[in-house]
Length: 167
Image (cartoon, rainbow, N blue to C red; front, side, top):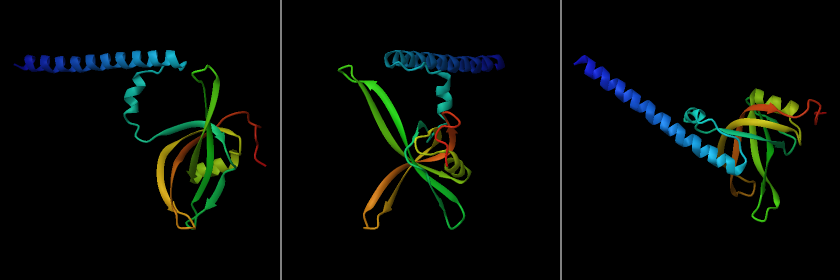
């Protein structure tokens, strides 16, 4: 009777593995077909499983849109705000090259804020990782406004070392 239970468990385990392999094949083929048409790179389907752990994660590469503004709160915490421009290039239906720019509001705290203040100036290319948040606030006129921001957790400085050096 024991061997029957072991075989059943082994069979179930093999079935799970087979299903996973089939899913990976389907996903892999889907990404390869998609990337051929869009000129993108192939995506490793094994990374799809690690993506299930990602909940709210943003990764952007772009250019700093304005000189970051540091604020020191009463508690002593440092916060810095700046905008980041990301560009997308594509060809429209007529075959004309089109460049589209999207602007993103960035917020960084603590050590990350200090790094941004020291090295990230207007025009500097950076990569960021963070999470997306939305909040509302009231203007001086009493209007309620809504804003979506990226709370930056990591910054990677790109480009040449001497490029756009802060004064």
